[in-house]
Image (cartoon, rainbow, N blue to C red; front, top):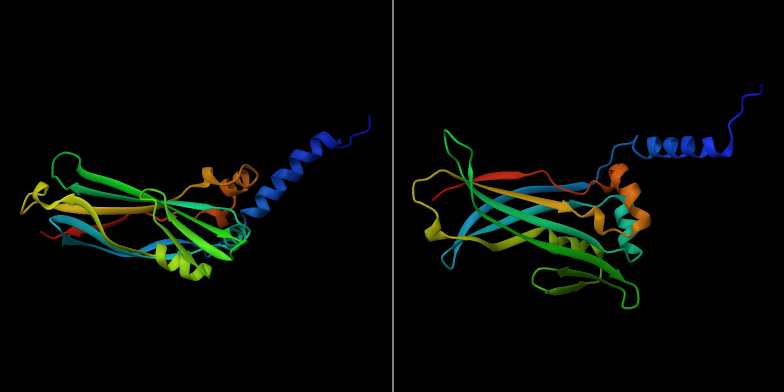
Length: 190
């Protein structure tokens, strides 16, 4: 009896080897929230934050080829309690899309929640807009009790499911597509 690998059994092995090689290196890309704070604006506690966007080589290549990339900015305000779990007082989000349009040679950043659109001549300028949140109203000031203990939380989540279907499998196993931040927490001083 002669033992050999048929084409059918070889294909899964090649695919597994590809996945292993795609995940075997570290990526310098990612999203980091570097600073967040609350301000009082028009009777609301509003969030201002600074974000460091470092797109990976694969994500940069995709956006430069016209693939839209989506991120959801998530915000929470929680009341810290001693004996039971923290209560979420407010929870809001908004979503950005960035896409390159070759016909007009512009990067377009669209706030999918408000519909506002900004155009930029470079990817760096487009990411700069997405790297700054200013005065995003989270909760009315009168809904927060004076003297209580509160914490704000923020996360930026990359939506891999919004990628075109051929890119999705690689996006789930390749670290270059891990473009979400961790939760960032900071106290509310009222």
